[in-house]
Figure (cartoon, rainbow, N blue to C red):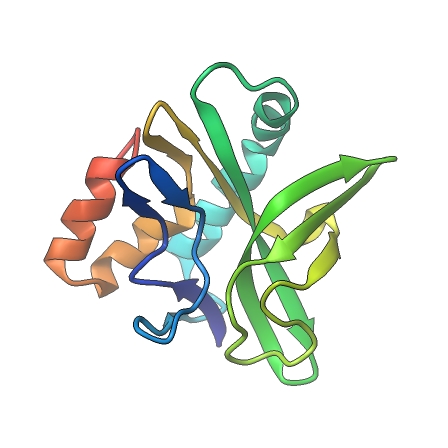
Length: 163
């Protein structure tokens, strides 16, 4: 079973502050939503995200005013299974991509919150950034709506540029 992390704080927006796909806190633990490996909607969402990856990299490399808080969702595997993590503090250097794991693992044990990792582009399953307060990307979130409480869905749809 493939696991997609969804935190009550997939994105926290408070005043002018913003925490990209957020870290686990003592007060609000991560909530993991499980999705079967063969889920067609999730596969389509990841395919859409990968198709849009060149545009993401273009914006990442040349952001305009109001484009910020870039993050990637990355598949990590080990002998325990596979899990998708949001990674922030993205850096592209010498043809390589690096980022920081931004949530605690639930299944895999080969990474930890705050760990800096090298990212292989084939392992990128989604991406997002903010443009003038609206979320761009995060296609896999939309698939998870059917498993979320209505109030959460409403909250996230208001954040998305394309609900």
